[in-house]
Image (cartoon, rainbow, N blue to C red):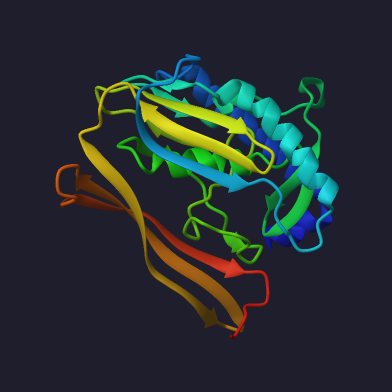
Length: 266
């Protein structure tokens, strides 16, 4: 019923979005959270994890120009996130750093996902940056305070190198990505664009006590009421640096997403 109303009365959707933005702004005003804001050009010595993701992917019938627009948007957002340091007791917030993606800042139309559909919007494509940050953070003791997942699997895997369901959804400003640093070490994100990839790493200012790995479990496609779904579990493993012995494991994500493309039966 809600989706039908929004389809026939789009102004209700815009009103609801604005209401949620104001609500988050008010919450931020009265919050006592100490947000990470400091950026350092010098890199920390102890690398926890490196990763790179393809900039140009095959996405159904999407306009290739929107892929180039995404790269423009990523380049602008990286100016606010590259080098950011999360000191002990601080919280990283995606939108606190980037702010609203406006044309005045140079953002242009890019791909966005909304309610299981692909659309365009100013600043579209920043989910790739959020995905990178989330994947890097999973390989540290940082606590995930806020993360939103896509309830739909829109595109088939194209050169995927990380488990399904380790992405994240962001939408200014109430659909945020936040990490909290409960340790005595500081962590730093370093991010840049190469010709083909968004590349990043997370480092610490002191040598980490443990090694962190991410493991996918129970991956499956399944059918329910004539619809295909995809599910899995994402676990974070804390391992001894000396002998790779498992110290602790934590279930981070349980995914259950409707598949929007034709699943291969091969």
